[in-house]
Length: 397
Image (cartoon, rainbow, N blue to C red; front, side, top):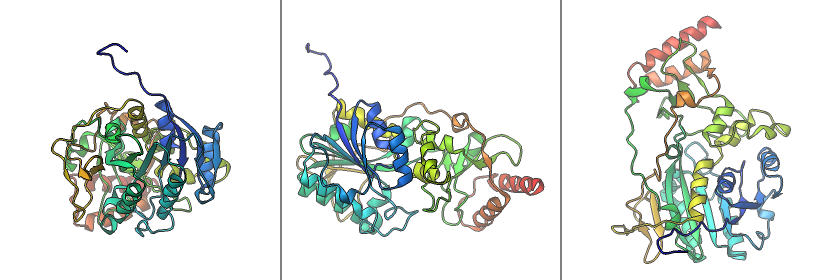
């Protein structure tokens, strides 16, 4: 290599995917030039998708029955179950039966030390029970002598009209994970006020309205997994135009798949073993592909991070949005925001390729009752739009 030339990207890594879901992390890594040789997923509908989409990779079910990852594994990925950590879930914490399975990750790393680890979960893990979940994860990594860095990342940074904030943690036995996770930063996003909703399509959760709304300007709020029995929990969208009765509805599943970075129809194979409605849960529980692809690119082409000004991490305080343990850490990464990049985003109204399914009169009526009587801030004109939609739906019934 001549002086002044950039180093070529490193070879792709061989991955073992634990709690793989429908392969969001792994699809992103594949797009960045990595490969996956082992998938582990206990949900039969998710496993059907993995068999369909990654037919050349091995697939096992229960992570507790995995004795070791393949000998040549270079990265372990784990979007471990978030149900016990999520505000929308049980909030049992890291000791819950599902989220507590993250211990299996460290059991396998103790058995075979691999160079890299990538973990994803919900931001609520930083606050639930004073951040006990993150404390457990960090303690395990410290005991295994892994350097670690984590960061909350918003999927909107990658051009998707989907406000989805998730914690991504990269750990390494040999290198500096900050060069992967912190090398890019665009800066904080400017959020428009709720009263700007007439300018763009906006998403909200019609299942809420008493203590929260899940409002997202020119985006949908975080897609959720829904119930364990397959009852979808899709958000509603209000369009900036259209006749009453057609302006407010729920997105098509194929658009929901695309909002997570998958191709439309990615989860079709799940219908071979379960009800079609279960596909909503798979999409809601998935990892955004584009975020994983960005991490995958940085794994092959690490950047630089200037830690000047970072401060020691005081664990008497809540966990920050970004922190690391490298050098004389642990420290708070003060210069790191939730937006590593800012790709040009297609407006939500243009992103949607399929018509909305109108929000039913019953659903609209229930949401309107809860929201109108709550103390939540009301976007100007929004209640009137709900009333017009309700009237149109009742007349068309």
